[in-house]
Image (cartoon, rainbow over the protein chains, first blue to last red):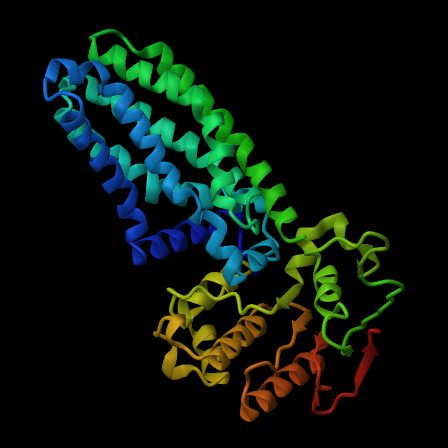
Length: 226
Length: 188
């Protein structure tokens, strides 16, 4: 009997996570990067908590965005190199949904760890406890947006030499709106304001990128075989 | 690259695509598998153009390319589970049978990265066998296989043909398939 698409998506999601954990340095690298940047900031600027608090939202968001960018390259690169991408295209399953499962697995392995360690690092930058929920929500949405957009970039730059340079050039400008509203949301929460507006905008961007990106990825993956 | 190529394959038939290096054997196979689009002309399966319903066509097709399409960090068994599982429900017993058939029963829990090139090819063969596809498109399937492996693969292909399947093989050496005559198409 032919595998249903939900089974196939579960298989892809689980398989990609197993592979990610077997090459755990790929998971660790973004987290280490984020931790390093946020610990270097007080050393380079000022250890004064009051001053750090003013820039904490921006620093955390920039560092998280760049950290998430680190893992994007691996999204389809190994599949392309070892030929499993061809088999995925020929599996008889709708490619866009397979791509969605791969994006979800990539976010779980690279975005979610950043979200989980962010409160710890934020406290070190003087972020008050009541802003931590907003921080985590905004980062969860932000890394989700970056994984979705990045999947398109990764699929488009497959098979190109020096594709990784192009990848950041393609993805970062598209992620700018998320950075603006995400950092703003955290900043508002730090100052005790209600951050509902920017968070809702982030949510809308997340839904938009999540729904459109699988279609773009599927088209790009087909082109990558030419 | 290719011009004026016309090819028809029916059930129970094996076609050998021959030609010197760089003449376009792999390109032809990739066009047939639907991975590449031909600039002119097209591919039809059971009377319908494959582009009309590519997913349905892909489900009836097993493609073995230059690369063995194996994940180095997956074990032999996981590789089969993962790739065959995308296409159809496959039981652990079926996978173990196929691994025993291609002579990899002892390596089933080893990661693919420690297996030799010949063993990779055998594992890729097991994937094709388990795919339950009626059309097999094999690009240089005998590469890296030892003598026993070549005989084994020829036997597997013969069984597939007996069951009414069709096979297209690109290879430098004409394959000897037991009980079947191989139709040769020479690309020039």
